[in-house]
Image (cartoon, rainbow, N blue to C red; front, top):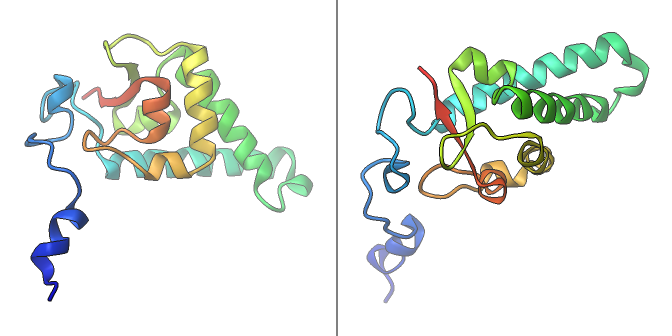
Length: 147
């Protein structure tokens, strides 16, 4: 007979041996430089989405019936601002910044890859033990706390 112990390890995922997200990346557990956690990431995305929605409703209300203009604005916002400054308005408000694995600025090419995958929605919700979504893994980036 199969019991919880037989499937429990499979459901819990692979054991990484790290105590907190980002430990194997050499990131601190808390404070500046630590990996941005899911709650902050979600709130930052909601702030950016609302900002893009408001802009789309103001500039192109007749074309934004299905939210595609909002999604387009979100894509442009992410490519331009993450490429130039490392963060979107939502990231800035919540004290987050996108960096390369070495802690350097991302640049426009990586920001474009990351942003296109972000807009597909599946990559951000599938993440590894370091809380890096597939979009961050593909662009070789990490979202870290700045304060």
